[in-house]
Image (cartoon, rainbow, N blue to C red):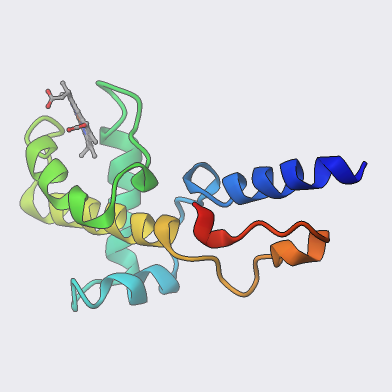
Length: 129
Ligand code: HEC
């Protein structure tokens, strides 16, 4: 039994990575992108989410925001905007949505995440990722 704990800890650490990240924008996401986009709003991120679902998965599977680093998205969307027939405003909304969720996906664990130590020893350091 105790020999499965390191594996469990590893699986939990992996589960904390991108695939489980919610795509629904929050006020926390707005705060996250404000340093880069001071005029970002929740409505804009929600519009970006809607457009992303409608336009970014027709030619290929929708690439999830956490797949790429936040600063990689603006160039990608600039490249994809014409293919997805996005207006400049729409392109901005999609970019900000993708950057926002990517920031969240790559953020270090928040205090609400259960500490891995709660599983008992041996502990797996979060910095091992
Ligand atoms: C009309 C078809 C089409 C639409 C719509 C489209 N894409 Fe693409 N996308 C492609 C093709 C084709 C590629 C393959 C790489 C290339 O040709 O640049 C690609 C590649 C990508 C890649 C991988 C790029 C890389 O360098 O690894 C990402 C990420 C991506 N698209 C995101 C998006 C997003 C976000 C949207 C919505 C704004 C979108 N795509 C809409 C056709 C499309």
